[in-house]
Image (cartoon, rainbow, N blue to C red; front, side):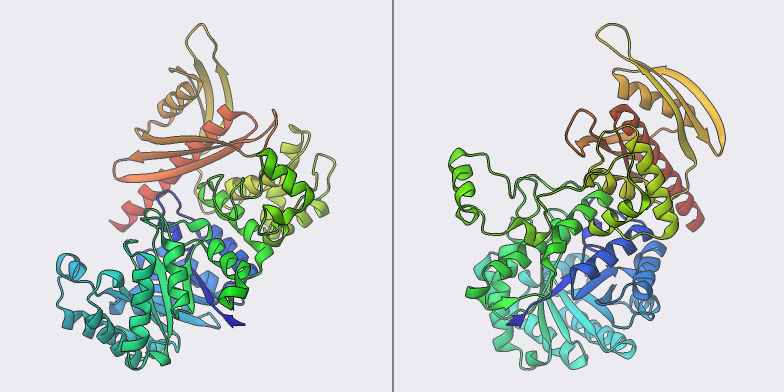
Length: 510
């Protein structure tokens, strides 16, 4: 069975989703899970773009075994050099460099002639090839490039040492038949294409990222760049889980497969949702809450008689189990650690200790602690260790009802010193936020407020996500608790702490 390589760019392009940024510890945790999932290549970040991305690429290179570890780099010498410095601890490093080939990009963004862009691409591939044997080149906006010029650039970069040539549909413009013809044209018109793997990177602006990727595969592409849950710039990227399960489910027709360990798909999806705060839509293919739910009486009748009548994929095959391990206040550390492992969450001893203490505290409030509760504890409260907590919630009391003005009394620690304030608002959450703002002296604007029930039942944890802006700094905060007002306060303070961290880093650069 011929294999299609899976290039996961969740940590790079996926992180470019608004509000989805991850810290270094979170990125390493995700990379370990991606290795367990069986992806062939992990694009760990864009090393030159920030100190955080450099450190994430460096740590993934040194700490995650199995996949090729890749860093993105513009076709600039400083980017290539930075990528190598971050990657040099990896057993199997790859440098992925790019420059645009469409006239609209070259004229309006890069201000380069076609010849200048081609020559720079060749020079930077050669520079990268001086560091590593595995070099990937992407002609950005390839789907809107003039084909003859695109063929010329591809031939030149392969001669310069590129072993993978990635064809991006950067703005999600192509239709499936057009994109398939583009890949076929490359195979037929680039004389040395046999020396490189053809990859594709499709965006979902028209909802066609997976369809375009599949069309490319059917026309000879053998690497697909994708993300968990399809997250990414604008409308996102091709969804890893959809591509993998299409190839697996229709293997008899397509004659292709991947190395993905399918039963790790759902745990990986849940981990990404928890860390980024971007929830999967219920009707999302493969990993949505409703993907294996049946409400129609006709469907239910068919499923009861034979699952294959309305399920073309077994839920167990992607890691969705029918049974639940019930964890409560009497559970011990061993059972908790075992459940973390089943969920794809392998923590250091210190983080395990912190997670278990928080779990025991939650178990005192709930009859049962579900998998989603545990994921929320780890992703919202344990892995955010590199955030300096200038503000910390210590006490909260709220009064609200059908008569009277909602009020809040809040106590927080500011740089270790306790401060208390009372305030009012249009509602209990508004009262809490106004009071916290008065205590901290911050003047941020609330851009987004969303609530998600992590589990069912009246004692369910609620997860709150907020997005704050202060000046040109924007930060997303998350908080989870059985009391939604407390979860709201935690999310707000988490975002304030992130804003403080961003402002400090910006001032340090200046």
